[in-house]
Image 1 (cartoon, rainbow, N blue to C red):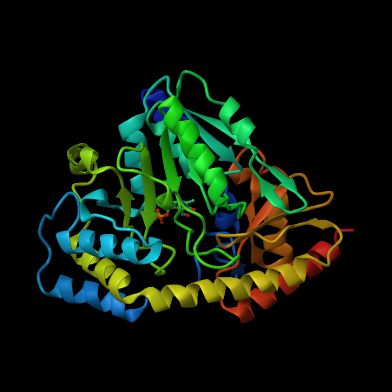
Image 2: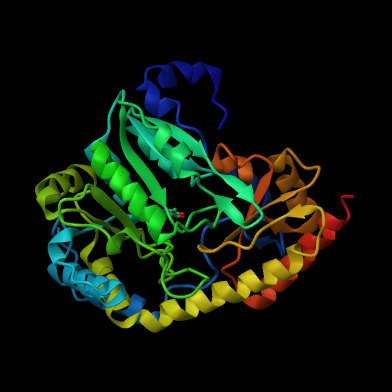
Length: 396
Ligand SMILES: Cc1ncc(COP(=O)(O)O)c(C=O)c1O
């Protein structure tokens, strides 16, 4: 956002690492198109369904029933129990409630993870292109991000593990592994995860495992996970969220999974950051975990349908470089001859009435690409992809 020069001194007197934070790269396109009639928005990381009634009703009942007081910093005990049961059910190994900490969305879980592990002078390694909030969250602590660029090959995006490991320096404290990944749809294999964990153990590094898209895996079953590999002593933190699986992006509720030894530290950080998540919202989250498996399956089926529509539209276009993602719910592709994807995304809003995220928003490796979120009703996805492929075909 532009600043009036007369108030520049106010910005100049802020902490530089806060003042320097970049504006989200998607916002420019969003602001350009948000009020356009008939625009189909595929720029954000969310679907078109509202939260299902059984979750909203559980939260409303708690709110109306007077659950409006200060609450547990680590999360309501029944929610932590429901989290343990959910993980035990889906990862087929036992989990204890003491390892789960309720947060203000996956975003706050990430923020707490970095607040605990890094500060000025430290480095965090992130495979890139990456969801930009990793960088933002790291830089608010004064630490720096070191991107390791992935490559788009004939079978999809690839992370070269030797490249990842050789990026580590004595200042490195954390490896961020987001699998399935936003925006690339890359999914680490179980053997990649084992090699990364072994490397982190040897070098005393933390891993921030962002597996929030773990249910959205198109090769069947859940995506490979660090959950199958960790022991209680491992330095692995999981950022998780209710946002995507249960259509709760606007609620701002998620969880951090960490070794129980960190419990008091996490409790203190929650206390001094937000003082906890509203207890009535936590009641909704309990309903999501205990009664929401079928809804998640519907969401995954919707994403699968959206993916098929996107692939059918993009694969025949010989000016498009696209490989169907293995996970998450984004198509991340390039159009031959288009380098400035921010300008192109603005034109696509004006000329095709579809909202895309420009790849530049996702940092190194994102140049020349676009991201489309396909978690929408099939009719809308068909229409959006018809408009987009017509626009692409007209560019040659
Ligand atoms: C990779 C990744 N991690 C975490 C999040 C956080 O989600 P939320 O803060 O809505 O829980 C997102 C949201 O888009 C994401 O893409």
